[in-house]
Amino acid sequence: MELRLRQDDIDLLDSGKKIALNDTAYGYVGGDFSTNPNDYVEVLIYDTNNNFLESSVVDTDDYYFVDGTIKLNTGTILRKIGYDRGRYVVKYSFLRKLAGSDETVLVDENGDTYTDFHRMDGGRLMSGTEHSDAAVDLFVKENKYFIQEISPSRTEIRVVPQNISDSRYLSDFLKVQTSRERISIPSGVKFKVDAQGSSLAADSLTLEFDKRVKIPHQAIGGTVVLNGAFIESIIDLTPPDPSEARAEEIESADVFPRFIISDDSSGRYEKGDRNFEFAYNYFKDLTESDSPKDTGNIAYYDDDPQGLLSIKYVDVDTYNLPTYGYITGQPVSVTLKSISAKPQQTTFKYTWEISGYDKDGGSYDKLTTSDVTINNANDLKISGTDLKEITINLNSEDCRYGVKLTIERESDGIKKSILIPCCIKSE
Image (cartoon, rainbow, N blue to C red):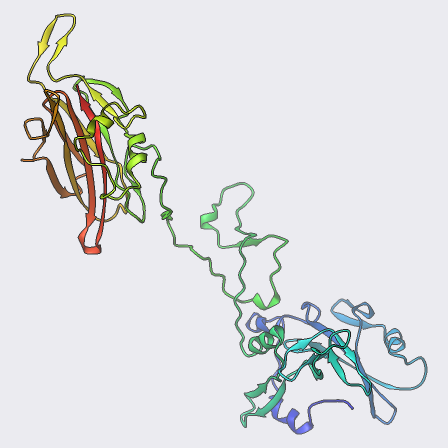
């Protein structure tokens, strides 16, 4: 039999008001009929005594639109259903699917849906195309929801779903309760500018959508939100390549201490890599306890063929050609500069330490302030807020100098160090 609302239910629901489907205020409804892919035509067939016989959904090929009017191929529609002759009362309903459909679904006792089934003797439906011990009983349910209650004010109805565990069925049930929906468009949108280039995209208030972008009618009258519209710049927090060649510090979420020689213009440079690239890559992944110390085996680093000894300077007192005179009492001045990777908008404490040995008469003695000095320091260590650069003076010959840089921020417990032993040599 025909399942329709009873007249008393219609009287409760009908407020007497009408809306224009193309009004932007009702854009969420989906626009005029025929503009929404969820629109369909239903045919209802009665006998001449107005007894309901059956209903069916009209094929989209059997109706079309002319100047806003819907034309129906009524004869074709009836013949497809099986009515070739006779007198009938035919009604057409123009509907839009918001949730559910005229289809039926097969579910088990838990509400899970199935598409494959087989029929047992007696008409019993079970899961699977063939019978097996794992097959379960299936039940036919209409893909619809029930109106449970209508409020006395006729402004609210309570709709309940059936026990159907289908994502589309449940999703449509939730969507039908709201007039708002968020639609994400990842690409295919740009600001409109004139062809002459007299207007800028930054000043435009009109958006153009690529033809491939399908905007549903429900979006009419909606609000366009541009994600990240107020972002001026993006800081890449990906840890930088520690071996990257550079002359300045760079931004990083983590701290990676590193230093170079930025100035040694005293004229004593002989050979070596002022960026300590090989030595840095050798020691950067070692913990402080693992890192080699400036001990008696420093001779190993003294003539290391791989280049751990990065910088070599001529003696403080050297034979000066072509005058054949000696330059005495003139130290080699070297400026060490941090090129560390770290957060650049916050304050850190920098600590520089110089260590090493002086080769006197074949033995190694620890460096003292008579062998090397740090400008503005009383010993071989200096600390300061954002102390990114220091100058040291090499005062003695046959020395091996190591440099340690520590960067820390006590408030966060951040403390990272790099120690490169025997990275500078005076000879």
